[in-house]
Image (tube, rainbow, N blue to C red; front, side, top):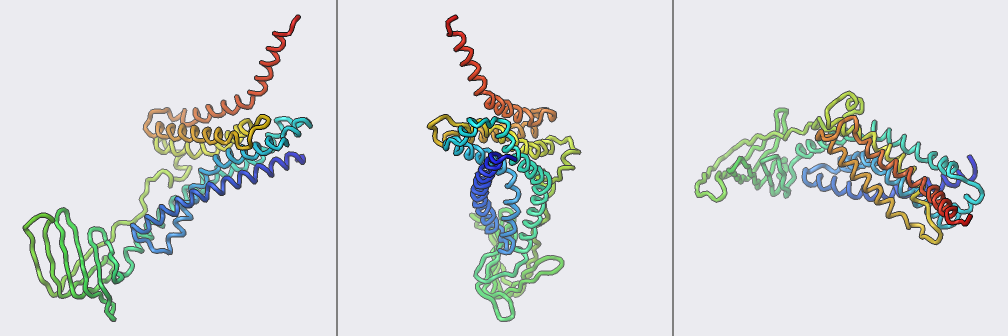
Length: 362
């Protein structure tokens, strides 16, 4: 590899990694917020939260590679053109072929990484995340009751003011909701137990009020001992999510939803390759242009590509687009745009030369 190509590869790699890391950090902040909100709502134990954040983030890495590639290359070429390094290289006889050699040395490995992330890591991370969510939910439900804290068990809410030396709860409040009816129970003491058949709360020396809010009909009962059985909700991992299915399952199915997911997984590495080609003309600057002059064009190109790909995926799922067509039309549009942008300087020079010859006196 020539010295200039190594230099170009270094500059492009640094910008690509920098943009991808920043985008990953922004997405990680959003992922952390979502996981923490879900953990607070479903009472996950803190030991599960970190792993859930990691699994969620692993599924998003493949989405960052195309945008990181496009913005990273445009930033790298913008600096090279702004500092006149590309002008000096072109004056020394460096053509588009050598530039693209350096570009493909970065783009192709990144696209291969995208294939591995989409086809292998992503589905397995989705399955692991769903299983871990079920495990965290089950662990939160089966955790011992803590005094001074409300605990929800489906339609049953339990609160205890304090605990006794033997582990029993004292001054217990229990509310059960069944349709329009609400049962409110107060007891001096309660014993919480977990058995193979489920969970039970045994209440001692209490009072129970049954009725519907807004109604004058209610019933009050006093008791010495009452057992309230309840079962934890089914926390088994929900199957059938397309992002959890292996790529082999997607290839062997004619279901529009599965075909749309397959096209999406194939499309992200292709998007990376096309953005690698599109970044070269987008990064080209005219004299005295700022190094960030074309960043907005790169962002616009990514936004249009993403919107069309999402729309195409939805059309496949609803049967509005033939499966054979898939998302290939989206990739074809932007491939043509990239080729047109690459050929534009040659076409412009040819038109100027033709116009000059036409004006030249004979």
